[in-house]
Length: 592
Image 1 (cartoon, rainbow, N blue to C red):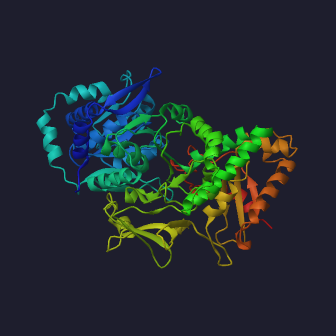
Image 2: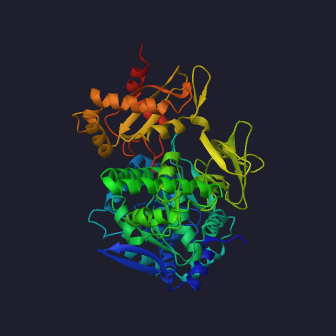
Image 3: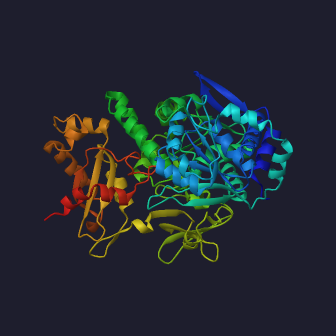
């Protein structure tokens, strides 16, 4: 039965009113908001937005790190009939202005004065903006007109009759638009994905049903809430069953917070898993003697167990012993000892990283999808997963590939279109309701989907060979010293690569190679380190077809970053930007 988001919140507050809904750290202590308090504060925030002049079908721009006020602003905007529009905290002033103006935001909700300063630069270019609300702190002197604190928003909400909010909520239907998700913009200005109440509530229910999420579960919120994946996982799914979302203090404190929260469901982007892998490998390198031998033995048993699980065979008889001696200790150190599900999404993850964690008794389940299908379109399950596969279609949806291999999807999770862009909508949705993903993939006889690459990112060499760069890049990132890799070669005679170095692990490798270099800048020009890396790249080449091999590479003096505009906020590569930024280095690889 299709539902609105407010009907889900109302039901959960009624059934789990005294249970914890959100926990946030304040002054070193975790503070709790119950589901009844959550609902009441959402409604009060919604009435505050109405007091500030928010009309139905107007936007509410939200910018800041994950915290309770982000959730309340999002749901409060929906309750008042508006559209929340998240802005990534890494966005520039011009990027923020584009989103707020495009969404016709009447209110902007900002985490603190840092983002207030950014909005003050663009406020005269936001004709629809009536007010700014700060999630934290008091309004500073000289902030300008119509800038309010969160407490002031709630005070204004108390002045609006409950009947006015109730009328707006009762007017909402499951088929109505409820939120705008702005794409990361890897190939140009972001597009606004329109999602309906039914899109969101149906998808959240699929997730909790698939993974058995329940009211006793804890989750941790730390990925950008501007992205649909984090909204579905830490906002809407817990709301569907009454689970509790804990807010990480920061990305830097994620490891510490994970050990405090010990979530039952944990979603991480590939880059987070890769950093965990690097840290575990660095710690393991310090082991010697018997401890080193036990660890190596246990990992072999763990990997065999993971493969057996995927094939429906019993795990090795000594798997419980390996689990007791090694795996349980690793999970405790990571804060994943209670995790029934460890998932990855938003970007491709290498098979090598999945095998590494499987060898430690932590199977990573890949979830595939996009904003246009409300996040997931395939799930990998604890008892139904495969290395290199992103799982099978979520129940109630359809999945197929077109003649050219493009992955197509259809179902209640598919969006109705882009806000203010019928042309872009027509490019994504065909007349039969199939969403064209832009990804190339293969579906096997059991329904498992394997993504091979982005349709628009396929490299076609001058010899006519079609090559998926992401597969080669994932192999290059497995070189211990390498943190990032970009493969180049479209319309060229051969492939080359741009490589960046992991500062910690590269230093260890440089030392082992006899290089005197101690910084990544020095390593990028050191002949001995270069020899080590050439040998490692050649090792990767032995696993590739001849036309896929890397003939030359250059070591960049720094890592690619969000701040420099080379990565999206979800760590996806902006290939066009990278190609332009490092054009000189690329041409140098093809010189002569």
